[in-house]
Length: 318
Ligand code: AMP
Ligand code: MN
Ligand code: MN
Image (tube, rainbow, N blue to C red; front, side, top):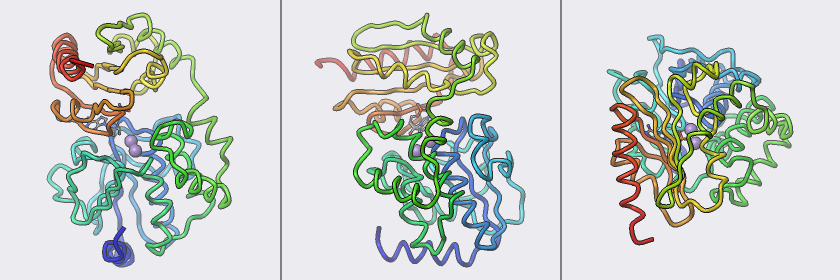
């Protein structure tokens, strides 16, 4: 990180009185952990802070300190707008519509076009929470036990418990440092990665029985109906995609999660050497080489056909 960028961010945060922080729809642990992991130190520094998620705080992460402060819409009167873990403005849902460029974008997606006035985008970082763990002290903000807990949740979520190829020695050092500051690894690990509800299990079941394997692609679907049958309260995939990507053999895993009759969330996961973020980009999405996503308009059948065709084309000759 350049000194210049660091001091510009430090100035921005020091001069801020009322800060809005937003993260992405269908929030994951890194979205939530980064939101709280920046919001809590700003509150401690005496700022007014709105922490906003259009989809609200998932029940699963309500154990995190400050979770009950998260709201679902932005109230006017703020002076500083920040996004965390968002590769593009649309990832926030409709929150940024009509607001202009955020003052600061903090992210780790290689597809991020740097849509903020200031941008700290670190594609090699294992999580946005890892970027924050490194940068907060340089920006004059201190990391207390609550903040450390939130940041560790973000790192554990995006590295799936330190097992992705993005997990490097620096990430482990940052995690150790957060533990020394008071984060409870075993609690966070259990809450973020191990604990499952019966609903999640039933929802997985709906997807698992429909799993198909063709041309080195393992794929399945979660419909709106599956969600109702499983009484699953969120609109995400309950991490089914990570379960599918633990299957050995497939080059690519694709999961289709119906969001509305004409809208489908697509998730890709790939083995080393296959960049699925480029496929996601052609559908208006983005992400990382090994894990990418897109929100695609069309019926489930249309989206499945288009996405599988594009994905197969990328795998031709492998
Ligand atoms: P997911 O499949 O939702 O777990 O997301 C995998 C990666 O792709 C994450 O890094 C997301 O930030 C990114 N991603 C997911 N959905 C989208 C989208 N609609 N647009 C851009 N990036 C996305
Ligand atoms: Mn995320
Ligand atoms: Mn992330």
